[in-house]
Length: 263
Image 1 (cartoon, rainbow, N blue to C red):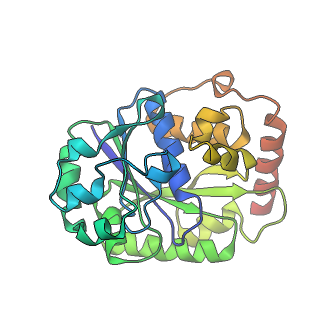
Image 2: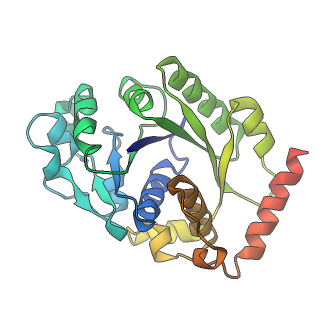
């Protein structure tokens, strides 16, 4: 059975695209035929993140009726399939997001998991990925403003008939923040399914246009992303397979710090 997940956030800059790419990469690594589609057609970033910004055919051309979806599929790390949107404003203007559902019908015949990287905020183009996915995962940063924006996205998702799987707290730090796991679950009314620490290795990997789970697999962020992907994939990944090394103490302190603020 194919499962479609939309990765969404209420505002830009939460790390949504980076998370989409890394989760998709690990799901492919865990044996799932995984596709990542960039539905943020106005501010397309997946192609840039993976070094696919100059490919000849993107989702823009497909939605404009100028190419087939098979022409816009590219292979990424660990065999993950990537469908980028273009960076051309002309291509964006020509693309018709109403055709996205038809494109998905073709894609789901080829994969186990489809990840949609949704546009940030509330817009006409952003509603479609929220409505057509099986489940929506909200990406939240440790700030009140991020949580409020995520709440708006959750409400919109439910209004259009979508379902929220849970929230991921991204860029969590050891310092005192404006937000806690308890606060997220209380305000959003959803479970926090993962905590990813603020990790400079994510930015370092981005400079190489490579997912952090590939470039720095032992880093704190990579280890936590692997855990989330394993949970989604339904695979039993032993601690030693997560390459959990000296970062373990940092992660334990981070988790302990966040849990304490729940009480």
